[in-house]
Amino acid sequence: MNYYQLKITLELKTDIYFDEVTEKLSILLNKSMLYNDYLKSIHKVNTYKLYVFEGLSPFERDKTYKKGNFYMTRLRCIDEFIAQSFRECLKNTNTNEFEVLSVDIEKIIFRPVKEIYNVTPAIASIEGKPWTNNMDIEIIKNSINSNTLKKIKIINGLEKVLEHDMIKAIEVKNIKPIAFKYKGKKLIGNKFNIKINEDDLSQMMAYIAISTGLLEKNSLGYGYCLCKYS
Image (tube, rainbow, N blue to C red; front, side, top):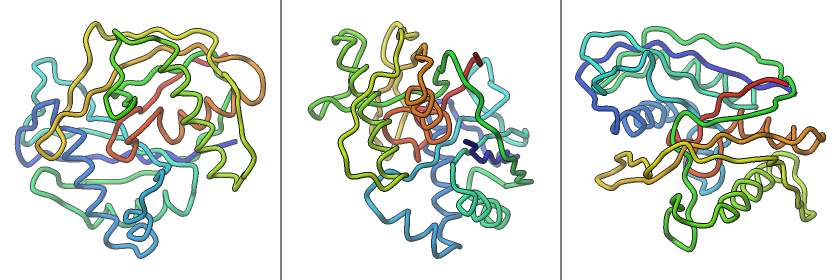
């Protein structure tokens, strides 16, 4: 198993506060997709987009990313054609907030992991409301497993029902829910440390979470994961 990672170097044209970063980056990526017929087609479809991106690095301690400074973000996906298409399109894309300076791509071979943790908030909608850490932890475990298995079914074209629990243990890292801005509203998410079972399907599920994002709204920059290897 492998996935593709784009390292995108950017210069900021204006200051951006941390809770606006994912929205501004998604605007950049969405604009780039208009330059490619295939990317444009998947942008319009209401389904899992199967890519995810992180925020900006290096992190600013005062939570404000500065005009004129250089930053990096990373985008991941499992489809080489999508990765190459993004690379070519992003080279020609700028917004009011970003000038794209360079886009590099690398192929990453998946190795077994013992733990994943998301560095951008992961979003789960439970009966139309965001999951928060005062709710039952079993609800979010079920959501994580179900969401990841649905992505596996889409990727592999499977019709059969998949049921599995990849989670050996889970910990909510934030004391209160994390809010980010999007189109004048707030999206509420959480950060998790998840210990992964060793069996093959659990490892496949971890691979999907790492390469395409944990839970929902990954194409808006939510659920970007890092990992600890076995």
